[in-house]
Image (cartoon, rainbow, N blue to C red; front, side, top):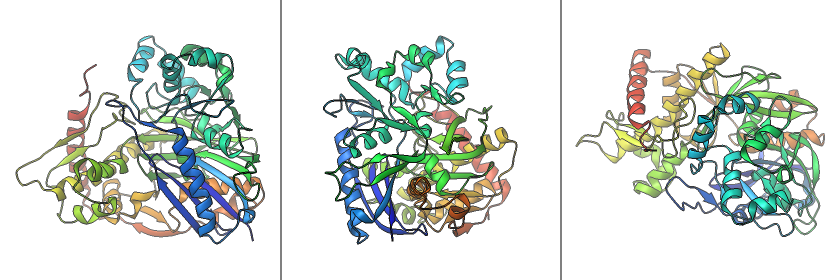
Length: 496
């Protein structure tokens, strides 16, 4: 029997999971790596640490599954999106640290482009807003600030890639420089209508086309692992950005189906089928995947800080020793005691898109405890999700029947119940919570015939628990009104 290995390269850790034909986890490994904060609002990672951690857990997951490399039929890749790397094509060494999607250093550059009236052009071509979140301005920053980078980029000596490109390059020993269509659609450089890099946008951002990876489908055999990596050469056969992979792993393959992933950030996607839907509510239009020549699209709402706010309670405030402790601390009080935390540590994402918002806690009294702060932190994740869903329902003209959820924070029952209470719809947690990795595995498995088709994959999806709304709708509306008051106090805080 053969298995599929999924590489799930996330913002704070690299993971690898071995799946069997039923979509069940047979072995897994995970390793955190360093986050680097050189200046306020700057977030970097070292490219070599991303690769070393991912290669290490890949080998470990195979061993933990009691398997050998020859038992792996294919590898699927899913990754933190928008994080930007530039490396030397000859040596494979990065020119500068990876600039992480959370990084805000190019906010002023985005403002200049907006002042030139260019946002409608970027929005129409890419489906994205002009924001420091995306890869294009990060790549431009490296070219402008690293000595000789622009000259070397134009000479074809340098390669640009998001994390999927970086992993594929290293896995194949430098033989493939590719990105899948879902990751390409997050760069501000890719035309989602033509399915190609956009020459006009490249010219505006002064990006040399010679640096760009080849754009490929999300499910096909791209190459094999280099001989020295594993004891067997394994086909690399699926790639998708983490949120698109989760949408696929949740089997949201019909228009109107919605999933929300609770990770470092929070990401809600709605499948819109084979046509891109333009948002009226500051959501993003993005490519979901391309399989067998058919491109499907999604509406997306992005919350920058979700699980990362719980990490801040652990690392910044020190009021919990591990992220798992937050539920018990939050449950030590009946409610947040009127405290609202807006975790705009990296600005606000959809539907607000305020690059200059900053984190805010309001409603503190002498009676406020660590429990209230913890509860307000969890509730902030649910409030931000409710903001996204309201915008998405308005754009799509439908009311949601249920929300499928995944990601680490879905193990927090208090948060999931509060989410259902706020939304007024059932929140459904699947039996297999590793839907991001599972989506990458499904894409790889489809490419090699490990799974025949989408109906076979869909038959594997099963709910674990459904959280049913229990809160009075008037109370939910009151909480949302107060959340909006807190949001207004966080917006535009950073002077510019």
